[in-house]
Image 1 (tube, rainbow, N blue to C red):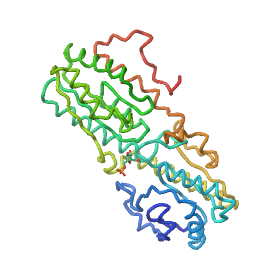
Image 2 (tube, rainbow, N blue to C red; image 1 turned 135 degrees about the vertical axis):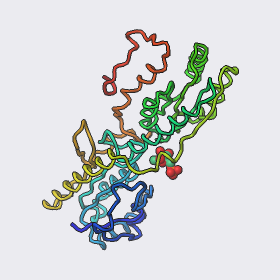
Image 3 (cartoon, helix red, strand yellow; image 1 turned 30 degrees about the vertical axis):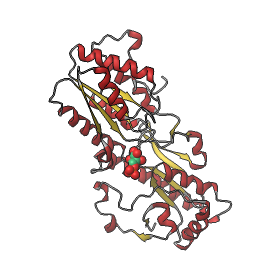
Length: 332
Ligand code: F6P
């Protein structure tokens, strides 16, 4: 195979920003954070499809390995759907999941999610350690768009008392109960209360609003501070786990492409990690697995861990047996 690198995603391919990649060119990339080839989130418009097809033909591209997030998956799916109109798209395409949001179909984890989780937990730990003042509630905010993976996992790992996810939303009744539990908790001796909110958990109950509600209800019993963890979650050198997973996924994806090229096929797919094994699914069926409104997979295995936070936040350890959570996959 001759590897051609596309600079800047699909817009880069439309503009013909491609160059051959040698082993020397990619030296060291495995340990580098960021994205050497650049990331662009645009999905080609209908008007751009013709130019995109011409670019694939003129650069003699026989197959596409797409490493990216939700929009890259949608764009690849679009190409497969438009094959009848644009014959240039009749090439095998394989998508490899890469997003800190971990919101991609067909994979329990996406490349970057572990690195982002490490960054988020490091920040939450630091926030907790900063609490020299006694009796303090921290309302923190993590990324992930409408997918709560980063939020829930960092909350569990940092030992948070409360978590808010887009998957569940936030209601006023719930906030009243949560404030009451928080106040009770400080009254019975708790010094620190960590709340982790997903950036899209609710449109109106923002991190700022939550902090103000909790402060108001505390009536001076504790103080409240906010911390939006922000873009540190996107940076940093990839963890060994991410590097190894990326290597395995791409190796598998290249194998699939090679098979298709050998048999002259155009079967396209997305690869991922499923129960410890690498699996692949047909790209044309991708919508079956997606909740397209919320831009995440319908099945999210990690939601099965949701109750872990409730268990931790019951400081007195008085959960009734039926309230004790089981940590199986969601729904079990
Ligand atoms: O999709 C990855 C992500 O980091 C989201 O979690 C976050 O909402 C968004 O990107 C931030 O986008 P930007 O880097 O453009 O500010």
